[in-house]
Length: 82
Image (cartoon, rainbow, N blue to C red; front, side):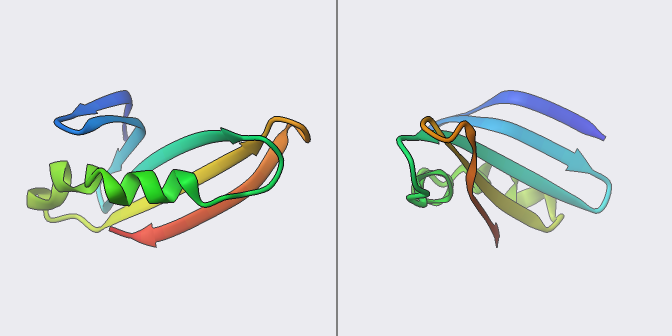
């Protein structure tokens, strides 16, 4: 397993990349005021972060996780194939 924090791309930084032999996970973390907004997954897709690993051939999973500033807990968790 390989973990890459603040994985640099030509469009910004992926918060966390986790590479295992069978697949690659790209994580984006966001702090939101209270309720989930979908911003984390939206940023992964809008900035094309998965493009960096497309030629690798392994399945890509985009994972957006949102934390509530008010509740101090996870309020949003979305996963999508990249």
